[in-house]
Image (cartoon, rainbow, N blue to C red; front, side, top):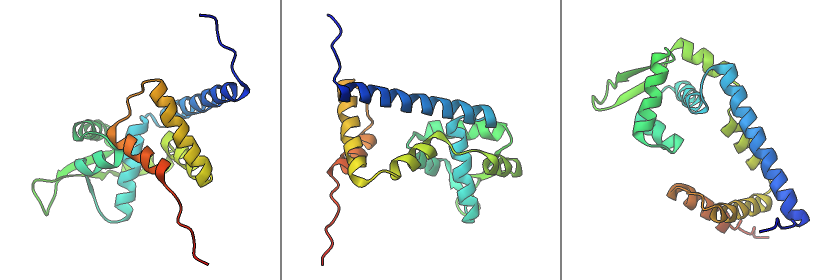
Length: 173
């Protein structure tokens, strides 16, 4: 099949998508190079730092929910960070069934020095968009993922549907 000529909008969409992918890949590599941690590990450290500032610890289950991952994956992540000396895992004083995760001093230093993660940068960029642009982006990405047969998790599908269906309330005069 001969290659199709792309319309201006199709070409611009592909180029824009490539630029975003390259930026995200480069950002991920830079964060990992600077910190020696994966994005997921850094995410966990930063969530634990937030919890520490609030005077609380987090459990593996709470981390799993925050990261939208399985408890097993969150546990593996916590074990790796504990081996690096960045967090400790201990049984809760209030409930022996709960294993709490707490930053060590080395973990606090690493979390405070770390640059913004790729997810944080992406979140900041998306939240800077107007509601209309964000809704159009969500619709376009859902359509693109369907065309690519991308496997969106049920949670992702619900979030995208909520974003697409969102209608701002009209203010009464």
